[in-house]
Length: 212
Image (cartoon, rainbow, N blue to C red):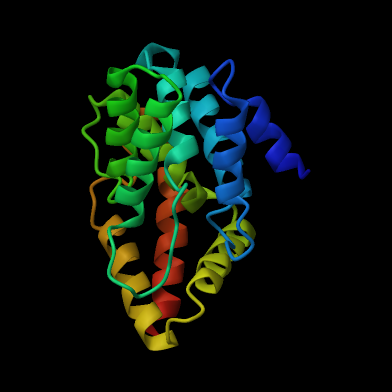
């Protein structure tokens, strides 16, 4: 058991449902995953806790947002076959698995809504649950340059089957779209703590991609 997996197990927001928890973790432990793995889930959960503890006035529904974090990348495929998006597939898993576990329809619906929103991380700042989840998911962008470089390399490994020019073009579009936003992060906490570093990392990687 890795330290990250151990922390992920301890943060599970449901008092029971151990079998469900292990099913979710097993998805993140698929050996081909390089970035969207248990370490990523651990980091997202930590950032949700960080935002919630530092910005107590948000009034975020911590258990629901945490549960959405567990499911936000439960499906992650990088193949070229036509299928629903990873976010849609993950939301459908959340709906099926959480309904089978006996959670209320309202909770299941909210978790699935939040998961679907990770497709573009575009939230109204007044949508507190979405803002916290999406900022936590994007917080990797604001890490130290060494960790950011590791993250970028791991994403490239997940898409190893994609030719370099195609990957560079697609990745550049994603980075440019983030930089075009007024703010990368939706919460005041994220904007205060992470915005500057994230933009510096995004600009640096984008420059490399455009000149490679």
